[in-house]
Amino acid sequence: MLYQAARKALGELFDPALRQVLWKSVGLTIAGLIAIWFAVRWLVEWAALPYLTAFVSPLALPEWTGLVGVFAAITAGIVLAIALAFLIGPVSAIIAGVFLDDVAEHVERQDYPADAPGTPVPLGRSVVLSVKFFGVVVAGNLAALLLLLVPGINLVAFLVVNAYLLGREYFQFAAMRFHDEATVHRLRSQYSATVIMAGLLIAGFMAIPIVNLMTPLFGAALMVHLHKAIAARDAASAPGSAPA
Image 1 (cartoon, rainbow, N blue to C red):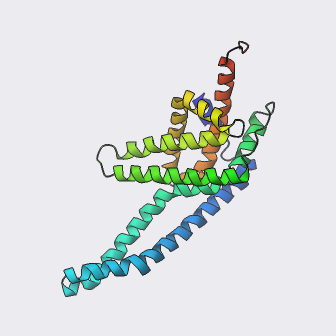
Image 2: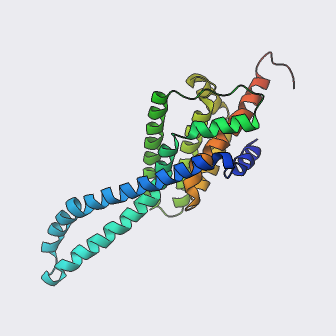
Image 3: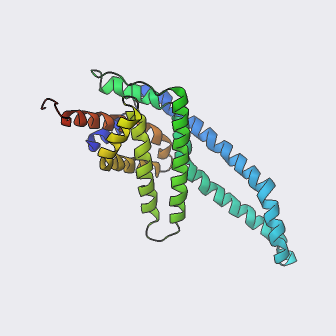
């Protein structure tokens, strides 16, 4: 079930019908990261850096005062670069949230023409879910980032945290096109191992530089296919259903 869903999702990443969505998502993500770069850089240079230099300089020898500022600026640049790499996944996710229904509609129309199409989540609810998605992914990754300092569990922590968060949020996106939130919660709980394994695939995808810009499209397509398979299995196992 998961293998077939992943294979289909990978095959659809460069589908000409999704190319416009892909470039919009990537372009807006890059623009968002550039905006964050300049905003944080301004904040560091005009707010934090002068206070840091003023605090450290009295503790250093006079001839080291200039070096303190240079060292602080270099350190701030390194931290900023790491922060941007960390933010690629969450930023691309919240921006691409605008286009995820387009991806889902295409996948459903192309691969499941006999099924009734899903209903897009209302705009207001979609915005709330996108902001919530961004928040939980950032919070989870901050926790994982702290665990990166612990030898032996650094990469494992990143993958485990994101497997749970990404699996949960992307599955909810795909399933809510067909079910209410209570049903989505039941399906996600009942098939939690499969959903988390799918989240692990998305987390692995997000860990690859440059490729991770396409994470939202891959995650959306993957979970549309996975939800279809889970919903079919759930319907077949329901009491009173006809045997396959």
